[in-house]
Length: 216
Image 1 (cartoon, one colour):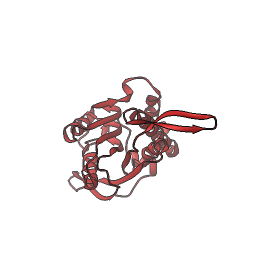
Image 2 (cartoon, helix red, strand yellow; image 1 turned 180 degrees about the horizontal axis):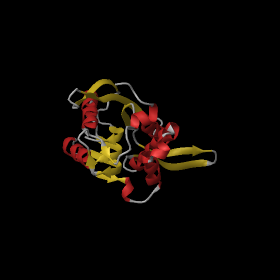
Image 3 (tube, one colour; image 1 turned 180 degrees about the vertical axis):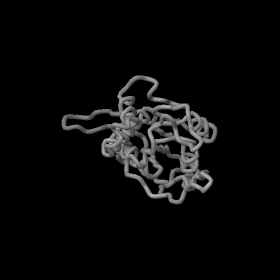
Image 4 (cartoon, rainbow, N blue to C red; image 1 turned 60 degrees about the vertical axis):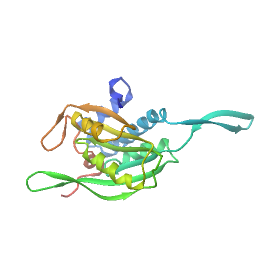
């Protein structure tokens, strides 16, 4: 199931517009904050899909019967660009367990590249709700390889894949490679993916914009 939040007008479109805007991107602190804000919005939307149970809450004046989360999700992030989005999720799921996976493009002299996964830190995820996020869903390969790495810790009950901007090709790849118990949440979907696998119009390199350029 795919849920694209920008199909309806909301504040999410404002934050995505700022992420794309070259006149605003030079402010890395604002760029990170917008990523974090979007993480918060996605966390709220995903919370509607989770299981709740009734619990008696003692107030100073009596007992209130409230609906609370049955279980906390596991929040997984692809380093490094996903860290501000991850923080947005943690702002809402503040008792969640956390997982981190490094997935990056290893470029070759012929301008081709392969996705390398070299690090993972994760709790057990067997029969848990897994939320895995990355700002950009270009080819979809990084997301899938990160998910495969996380399967070393068990099989999740349900998977929520989160991308702020995706290419149509990347969305198709995720839909064809992830299991049926997956919901894909996106901010926006762009039609074009270049030969070098950059999303157009996209926004550029989210990691560089958030944390500064890296040496190759």
